[in-house]
Length: 284
Image (cartoon, rainbow, N blue to C red; front, side):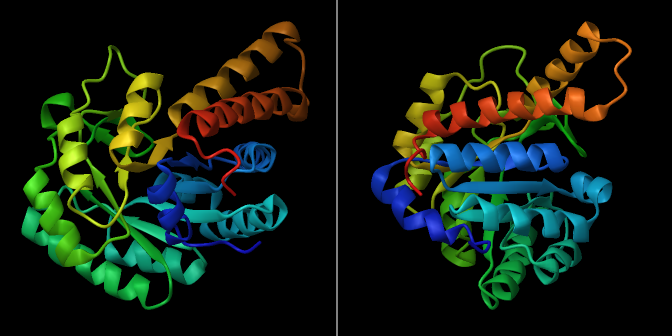
């Protein structure tokens, strides 16, 4: 089936209290692994693409691969720009065929974030593309993003509610204590912020930095209103470990299919496990 906006999931997500996973595309093997996982789990899925991945793969290649994967999957698939940094990049992705975009204005002042996000929503909604906005600053390192722990700031619930009321973004990402990348300790998630915001807006909450968050924390966050969870680092770790294992067993191997194949299988198992945890299996 063709690519869909994230609003295709919203009603079911909120009604049945589950979350759809965003799993990042880093190359063809990641795309195949995520697609096969969605097919086997009968789960809707979000292909996340960072600006760094677009530089690596190319915008035209990325969209073409995602469209083929979505047609093959037979389940709802959204192609989503992750952490779009400016209006021009967001528009470029929409014109290329993305069905969903995130505008990350969290590094601006609240008023500027509000103003810029409104502009993105107006343009995107006019052509049926869904929009995710962000409040607060999520720490950690992933792809081209790097935020020191001391610079990370939690979302203000009242501002998050006003942000949704004035922008009408389709999904709201709020900083609640998670971080990009893997954790050195146990994340201290502010469930009170999730609950207050979720109870006062008409959109699902997005949890960034889903890699390494304990299962019970994920389940509780979903029960309080999280409807989208981003996972990338765990998939990358599984991929890299599989490649290292394959090359350690056969140091003279030169055929990339011999080590990228096991890597693809490892990514798929991570994604399938997350879909079951998020409750999205058998929801397609």
